[in-house]
Image (cartoon, rainbow, N blue to C red; front, side):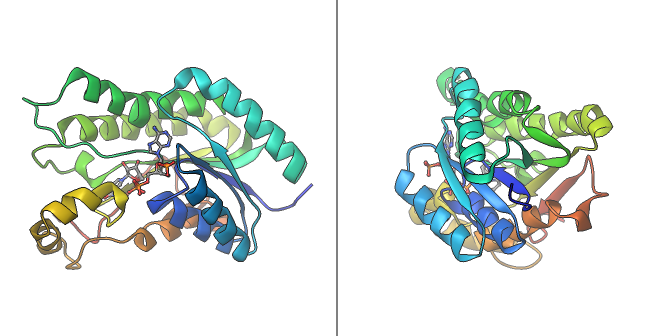
Length: 253
Ligand code: NDP
């Protein structure tokens, strides 16, 4: 059995999850990533994990499809057994997601349900499904957003789901403390990933506006987040529990 700890990053094929995976490997972990449709990007991330000295696995997961989670767990267990001779992971990072912009007046029930399934219900039930896959003494990191603390028009549904996982994270910390499993939220500010690509391309002035609202004077990059998540997956961060850590360069401070 490999002595390295194993982290599972949902949505590890691109953006923040990809940078988390690379940084986890740099810190000596093996990494399982999931992707939804972009298998090619997922394999590229696995190559980068291996370049950093880790072992990587990519598994498909549609976080919308709650009924698929038991099948996902079975695939995960098989892959863990065949590659690492174990059936456990040490860290679960619930990161997969997509953006949505719509005012309270314009958000449809369909868009709301989609956000709910991926950003809250999916996180809730994937974590539940993997409770006995997660080793005692491990950790859960849920990726929220600065928008759960400050409010910008157009994000009511998305930000409400992120608010919900922040509450959920505190309950996880409380209920799983007996197993010495920690649960924390990392809340990025606006980051330059595919998530914001259309918005930044269609309205480049938004980049300057965000920079002006940020104490450090720029929009975030994926590299601003991955190392923070990786740190939380080390013994150096073992006493951080039940917390919300915002990584926004100081937006709206
Ligand atoms: P990207 O669009 O760059 O990457 C999204 C990732 O999530 C991809 O790996 C994608 O897989 C996966 N994904 C998308 N939809 C699903 C789905 N239905 N089921 C499973 N996986 C899915 O986004 P970011 O990296 O920017 O965002 C990652 C997380 O960070 C999200 O939770 C987002 O809400 C949060 N966040 C992002 C911020 C930002 O400004 N970028 C700010 C604050 C929070 P595939 O490649 O297969 O499509």
